[in-house]
Length: 485
Image 1 (tube, one colour):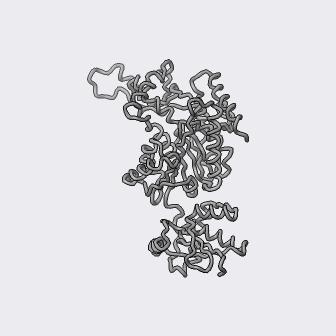
Image 2 (cartoon, helix red, strand yellow):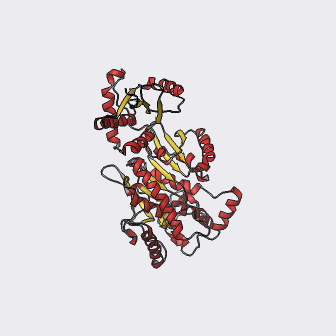
Image 3 (tube, one colour):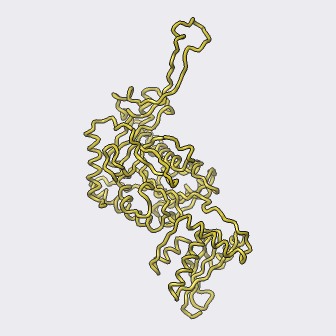
């Protein structure tokens, strides 16, 4: 080896699909670039942990999982530089060779099997095809919010999200929120349930590479004297930055949920235009919490239990305007139907005089002349004063309900209708491509993928058509000012 020659060393386990992917990349890169040199170190699962601890102790590194990558320069054995893991290696390739690549999970699985077969004899390992995914990776942006404290415990109890070894939660927020996130991570480790581990990440990219679900709780706050145009521009810039990272690091199967008090429908519209790596149907704005927020206060006026009601539909361009349609809230109602005997039976008879059955009906028969916001703001103010923060239950429930349906077994999906901000297909008079909160249902396509579609049989909101059209027109005008395409 010459005094200035650089060798990239990649160490890992053959059953690790990302290690196999990197090996495949460096092998092909070495064939193209004659000055690119590499060395691969294979360890079986039993050898890996002791070997990793030993080498990390030797070089004072902090590394926990396969693969481990470093570079060695020149003849000296001591001239080594730590690169890191998968994400750091992609940064290295992009910086020095302008390479960015991704392959599908099916291709990763086949690649991993090839490497297991290739090194079967040298490693003395039985050739067993390992499952591709052991954990469900969920990354939460804006994890320093008080909402996150309530959300994570609910997420890890959703059995529909559990894989073989449960869920890995990645938490990210701005550097000033580190200690808040640290406390959250420590508390979560004691919960158990479906949680495998909670990790605090320093960069968004670290949480995107193997992410299955991205939940964005981040809010671009509107300053008191800030105008609407400036606020939307700040939101646009924030989403443009996120879209760039998604295009570079994320898996094509990743799902993105936006749920905040900011302009979430506008932000989803921006991502639909700028994100080229994900289908538009994978990026949605959660909106049911607007309905859940007023539902309890409204039903207490009628002394009716909330468990007999579905969430009222939410329409609008969230963060700018929205309408909660309590008149079309669905109620499960117990009906008693007497038979002919009931008209002539003697008092005290033990014979059945009729039967009960359940039916679904819209709540407009009681709600048509009632103001759902009467007493609502007073209750919110009292709650905030007593608790010290706004209620988060409704937002947590809305996020969890979306994920439960999205990942449910095929037999359990049913015909549930929820409110969600999705790209319109032209239904309800909403222009095609505009992200607008509306009643939706989940549809399973022939290839097994699942998409949210407008539920076109649902009635239009109980409001003057002109006002509803104004909600849509406002969204169209604001989008045209910022979004092209």
